[in-house]
Length: 211
Image 1 (cartoon, one colour):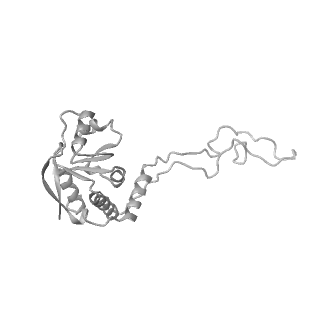
Image 2 (tube, one colour; image 1 turned 90 degrees about the vertical axis):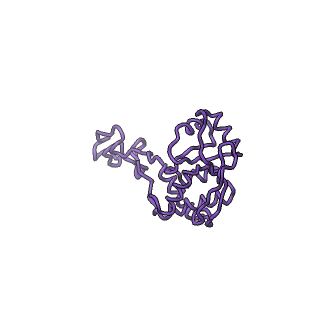
Image 3 (spheres, helix red, strand yellow; image 1 turned 60 degrees about the horizontal axis):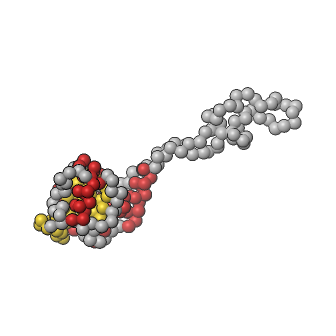
């Protein structure tokens, strides 16, 4: 077990907590991280691109000219794909880009990114994170007290509307409940701030003691 300090919002030590070596002491698995991030980004694609086929393009109801006797090639519709303004052949259609990776791979990737943040010294554990008022100024002061510079991901045990409102105007700060913690958001932010309760829930989730 590796012990890390538990801080209060002012940055004062309130004790220590043991980190599970099976989660925070492993060597990050970069290929699995890449697979999980790629899957996450694929799931976020809207997949709404669309082109019209010859059946969907307006017009073209009448045969442009008679079949024989004009000296021109046969034509049945001005909406043919070979005509200007006609339909599109094999164009993109709305689709779902998401796909599922095995649960074991997703857990391995989350363990890897947590181990990476801990190894970099960018994992901050706080006893509790409550603001006097849900205001941006309060959030800025809290981050300053914790010595946080740059972007930060704040993970709480349950959804916290006050923290979310206080960080809404901070472009480099994001607040997530532990159930929403994911590899992409951890990698996107330089520092991971997690409450003691959220850390306990996360450890149970990764060791299989909770869903």
